[in-house]
Length: 84
Image (cartoon, rainbow, N blue to C red; front, side, top):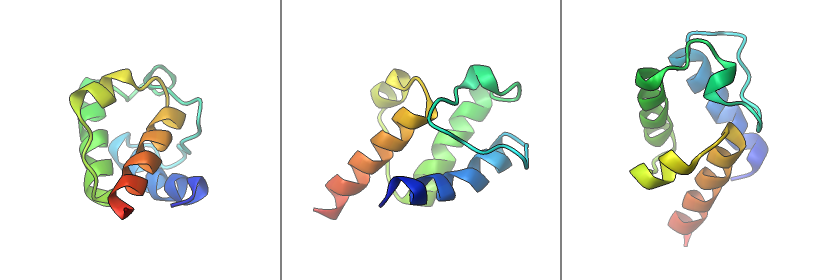
């Protein structure tokens, strides 16, 4: 899956979970940039992404992410591995 397609899939998830219809995820976006992005919404966000894309993240993988760009990279890697 191409990077642009992943962002297209992530946008409605981020908007729904973070309750902001104008939010557009981008590579440098972090939880510090979004007032509503607290720990509970972070968990909901991860679960929503997993369910939407049919992948699973480990706790270690999630704890290492520093921004949305790294999340997208992790998603791409997981989708590539599952396609093999």
